[in-house]
Image (tube, rainbow, N blue to C red; front, side):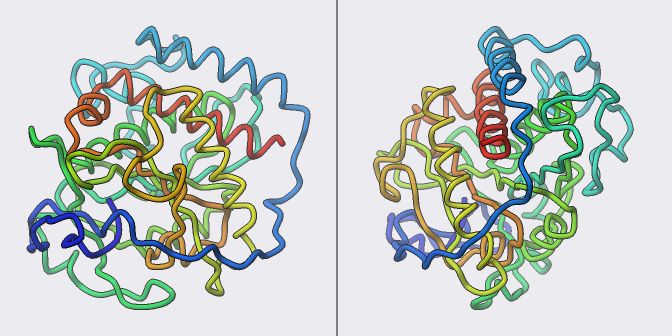
Length: 325
């Protein structure tokens, strides 16, 4: 969860070490000015492969299976259906912020770098002195990070974010992509949100996605795509980010049963100018709030490995659509 102003939803103020969102749904912002942008040369040759890959992954998500080349055993994460089950490497180096190596076989994303930022981290609450320090987000100061939100049963947003990110990483690598992630595990602290933006900016990524879940009012349901507002560093990627945001929205509706938010944004889209990850980006990027962890119906979906795989399929579909349009 991202942003500030929990009082709007009647939620308690953030405390050091407490599970708390960065901000508040419904922080309305005006539509940013448009800026010409292109994410770079796009190869149209991958269109047929794109359709086939998404269809195959959708079947895997629905059936709970994984591709043989993607299976591995005994990695950290959820025991029964870990994201490790759809990612190949056993070496800690592959989970670092440095890029993971793509498989040898070419795919529709061969030669393309994609960035993933799984929001927060599993031990952020153990070091409030670190995560509460102020950084510059491109417009104003904000805290380095927060702990994120959680479900009523205590399933944390940081855990959810990392699980979906690992499923997505495996799917991207299976399609030939080079993948850069901003954190190596769910057992650490940080990095700060400005550092996360720099990791992805410096990676050579053609597109990037920030993965989160919201902590809105308990009655509210649904996902929201957060899009950047032009503020200088991100000016040349605004149009591309808006286009990618539409692709993400369409893909979640097509590949999951999570509805658009009924409490935050407009038709599943919200512009934000107070988040370092969006303000400082120099690559096309959006942030997806995949659902509302404080709503019982959304929470049941968000904590289910099958739904987490479906989200990864949806995000892969959006990335393929964006890059091969």
